[in-house]
Amino acid sequence: MQLKFLGTGTSQGVPVIGCHCDVCKSADPKDRRFRSSVIISTDLGKKILIDCGPDFRLQMLQNKEEQIDAVLLTHEHNDHIIGLDDLRPLIFKNRKNIDIYSSKRVGDEVKERFPYAFADVKYPGAPSFNLHEITKSFTLFDAEVIPIEVMHSTISIFGFKFKKLAYLTDASFISDEEKEKLKNLDYLILNCIRKEGPHPAHFILPDVKQLFKELQPKKMFLTHISHHMDLHEKTESELPAGMHLAYDGLTIEF
Image (tube, helix red, strand yellow):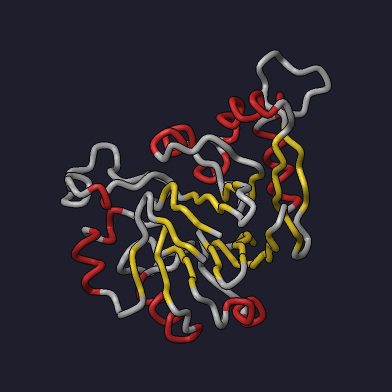
């Protein structure tokens, strides 16, 4: 299987509109971050999208991706779902609804924000979604999907585990019970918004360093990164061995 980072930035993206800090002015492509999203390619070649934010169309074009077979949603914030309408070309090409998997709360929010996708009589050109509620581990195509429940400030959201890789974004707390699912990993992908805090809704660098020591994955990649994290090259050189900053376009085979 393969994971490709379509985006590794926070809700504002990087560069931030109107900002002239060193990161936002950087010419290094690794300092340019779309909103966080990944594609999982299964062993049989199916494409599973995790989160569909406002940069989805450009992410697909830039990465020369042409197919999405299903969507997993971590939670309902705009930077993770507002691009769902841009799935329309793929829905039209495949001549079938796109399957979206999420918690019930998130599914209800998708219905609220995209009512035209669920209308009995659809407007011509409207997307069509099939919503599936996640309540436990399940098989999607040829991949086992294990949901990991974490807290994002005061709301419960999902991360996802495939084989020995786990993808968690927007977390601020992980219970001991869920941490058990994150042991003995080859890859742990975890959100880290900036170097210093505190932050009410996201892990910061000291938090993820502690989790790296506690969970001991073979490698950890940080995502959902803001311009406050400093330049990619500089920060990468300061991280402990085995911990890395993810960047847009990075792929991991697992």
